[in-house]
Image 1 (cartoon, each protein chain N blue to C red):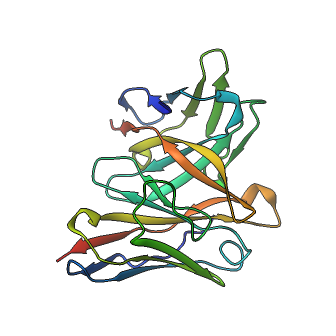
Image 2: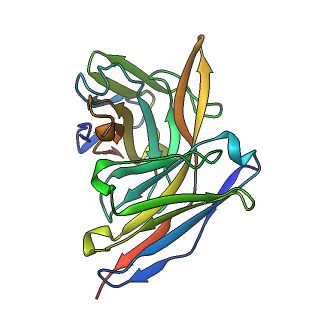
Length: 115
Length: 125
């Protein structure tokens, strides 16, 4: 399975807006398959942040938003806060003609730093 | 509350096998598929496979086919992941994650909503 491409890092000052891109292909995001986003703090398990491209689970602040277009997706954080420092992963499903090659794929991960 | 409790850290020699467990509680075990995801030190997340608790049907990532076996015990609400022929590159934290279908705007979306705390597996001679 392929891996979705994300920038290694993004940074911003408190209160600013940052975006994280997630680039896939016509076999995964563009298939089309949903994109989910997870937030991971050091030494902890990932936590669901966005599901179905644009939806926030209960309890996730509305400063987090997701979008998808074609073979790419994005996560935006508006009003950046110090507590948002973490690594963010996108995730989708990769489809193949040979079903044994199909499966879930994750992005390479993006570290968000609050300056 | 809903939680996934994983077994403790393991240290194995190259060529050996390891079996990690993930015990579910707080929900109906057979209603949700379970996935295994691993993360090597300082690296990203890697999907390994999925098991359906109700029938034990599995699907593995191509990379692990022939080397991984996922099983479940419905009497104890536990899923297991066994990885064989271990090598140093298998050193990682292994997570179980529950798959749930969430509805929004009339559409269903599959996602991983609950994760175990992870099990560290170290492969070293």
